[in-house]
Image 1 (cartoon, rainbow, N blue to C red):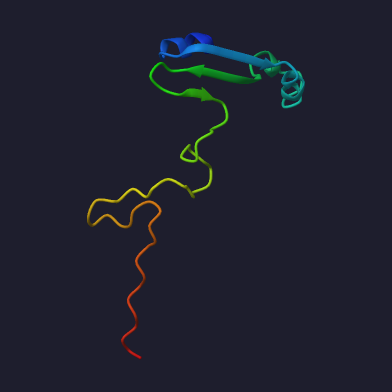
Image 2: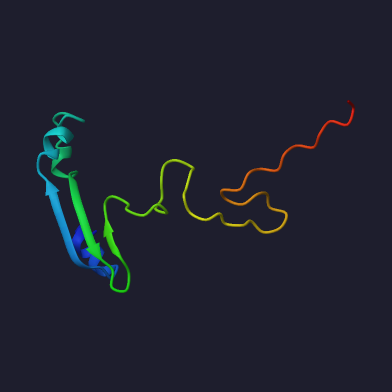
Length: 100
C-alpha cells in the first residue's frame, strides 16, 4: 500500500499536504505500551484539492457533509412510491382508533 500522498495523487488530488502531529505518537504509545503502535499510527492534518472539485479537508465544512447524528440541514430526498417516508420527512401519523 502506498503512502497517503501517493494514494491521494492516484485518486486525482493535487496540492496535497500531510502534516503529521508528532505529539500524537506519545498518546498512541499509551494505547498498547510496548507494542510499537506509535510507529504505524499517527494523527495528521490532511488537505488536498481535487481539480474541478472543492478543497478536501479533515474537518467537514459543509452542512451537508456526513455526520454522526441522523439530523441534516440538507433538503429532504423523496423516497420512491411505496417505500416509506423521505429523508427529513415525518413518518405518517397512525390512523385514529374508530372504537371510541
